[in-house]
View 1 (cartoon, rainbow, N blue to C red):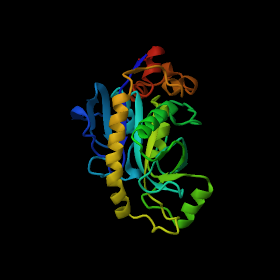
View 2 (cartoon, one colour):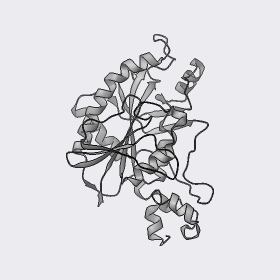
View 3 (cartoon, helix red, strand yellow):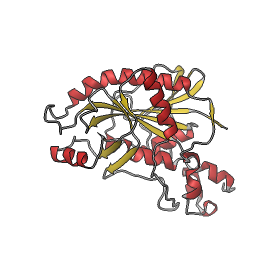
Length: 295
């Protein structure tokens, strides 16, 4: 059995998690770069929870300037076993109005300038992200929203653009033709990195607008997003608190296989990597470094 510690990544509007008991902000350093902010450690009904504001508490980082590798590494170093990502998104569907919630199950990556993997020069791995979400986590989130009668959809595709600009109307209509359901700027490469770090991950998408495709709604603006986001954030906190309260203190291996992703992905011999590389991968590949006797 795995003793659980829940990680929550707060997106736009979600910079604090006041439901945590005995909450303490701690600085966690990462060899991969600059973590977005300190991490907030606390408990919900005796479950250990770690909260990270993706953009920083003062929203000082744009999507392109977030160090996603450092963030995931910091959560891994903090002992996090499961991640819930909360993200403000635009809707590409008529039946996903502002204020709705969506549990994402697939992603399309349209980002251009982000470090997308822990692996490459020195240590090589090829991780499958065919099924990027831990369905177990999504089902638990869905159960909470159903119990609270919160409007939501259980599946949908999230297209991630580079930003920070919103889409052109031509782009918005193109993404709709691809079958995308929501549009955002942050979940990639975050979800891919979580899989490389062997942390099961799920996204709770909060719809704030109709992007710019809808003929009966004005193109998205920051003011429009902020107005809906305030209400969404209050609801999201309720969902997360209920989710954490019901989350098991121990669990079996995740059916998604996320806990052991690197078993079938690593190409490099860990016994042959440099001391510097071993230090960098001490959290991400710590399980295999120990089992292989690499130190």
